[in-house]
Length: 390
Image (cartoon, rainbow, N blue to C red; front, side, top):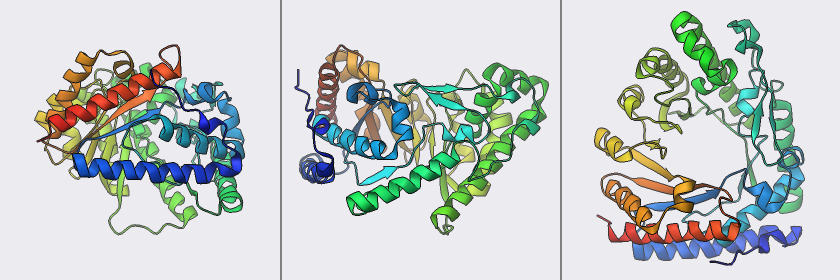
């Protein structure tokens, strides 16, 4: 078992940036050597710790992370250093840091409260529209005042100030985009069972609700660009992350009747959709999706899909992002890993593919064992991808 390197937890705060820069330089040298020996066009392997894993490993309350920008800044740097010290993946974290108040800030724009447990599990409050199908219960979205926006804006400005005063502006602070798809928002606010009933009993309400969410998304993203001073792009592109696009929870018929018109509205308003993510099963909907988004460049293919089926269905010009279930990475046998990775490699001979040892948590007794298993998986993946390169 590999020994866990915990230096990141003890580095003095005023040394964090230089320590991170040193590790980034070393990692880049490693990747340059991999490029020379394995090829720049190889299947790249990523990895990451699930957000609910970090609080336990570093012993902090996620609520403090979201409430205290200075603590969050320092903790973010320590976590990057830790991952560079302990993961054998192909990733190089840059010197950018995102301002965040939680993964579901966009849900709060529509009037739903989202809180977090100590380890960061989101807990969703009750929205009145769950009880009554009335769009007047959805307040107009205001970029500066809706939901968690006041906290997010303060956090962004504070992180920028910390970067300037403590780190010489070397850390670039990013501001989140509204990338969440309208189906995610609707189901979260209304509730899944009510949504399904609505498609049969009040279909116009569903159309109007989805259209309203899209309009608010479009307006919010436009206000974001104004706030950040970003000019309107000449050829705008966007992406959609919509985890409720998941058969059998929604049927192909529901997808075509209700979701696709909303997606067309996004494409017409925000530009060419080049990336799409769902954690759900996509195959029965994939051709419809590509038809409405002909400019798609990358599809996130969740591990619950048959990626070889999708490979046979779709144009090889479309890249696949193929994350591997953490339970498979952390509990699978070498033989099971080899069989799966050989399948990934075969798809990688036909189209651009990236893969990921995803959402690592403490599934075993210690993080040493978890990360040792993850790195064993990464080593095997690199070996198999090299052996099966077309």
